[in-house]
Length: 236
Ligand SMILES: NC(=O)c1ccc[n+]([C@@H]2O[C@H](COP(=O)([O-])OP(=O)(O)OC[C@H]3O[C@@H](n4cnc5c(N)ncnc54)[C@H](OP(=O)(O)O)[C@@H]3O)[C@@H](O)[C@H]2O)c1
Image: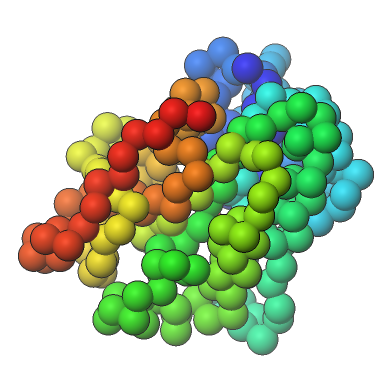
């Protein structure tokens, strides 16, 4: 399969690229900084550009079977103290709009996008979400606007949105579950490895088309699970 990965220099993006290549897929990795992607492979094509550039998105849609968007802010390597919280962020919204337009024109449908738990419909006013949204400030607004666009879109696109809790460097195969509804607490987390594997499995074998998902390892406060809903499998 030919898979375009946006945000390929990111912490999750790099793992997605590695896992996809290891599984024998062809990967078109969109990067702004080629030096930020140490992964190598004969099935790896590095595409240099900005995810908000229509010509770049057109190329990725034309030449690939499916897309994984792991775009985020800040730029990799930037410390939290250096983040400009006043700068407006639109990379997810602009690139998603372009992809939802370009993919159907090229006869492609499948796209998996990363979001943040606490954005869009998961902004549930809980203590965790209130804390998180204050922490990531205006950067979560890009996810809000993107989720709003996706929910309202009638583009013939098979999308899945994965709303992430904290992501950490760990092993592949930690216990985790995927929900369409859950209240999280600060213990919620998932490894880059498990998140990448889930995103990859979704593009290869779509099981959660048209769903906003939250993926997390078991929570410390198990009472939160009482009102949670496990994501049902929905074929494309
Ligand atoms: N990390 C967490 O704990 C966490 C928690 C909740 C949600 N999330 C979300 O989960 C996803 C993956 O997170 P992550 O931590 O792996 O992301 P990350 O390390 O911050 O990577 C973000 C990626 O987006 C790229 N990017 C940003 N603007 C771009 C543009 N205009 N054109 C092209 N590329 C651009 C960056 O490229 P450069 O390397 O060139 O900057 C980088 O590759 C993101 O959507 C993030 O918002 C993360």
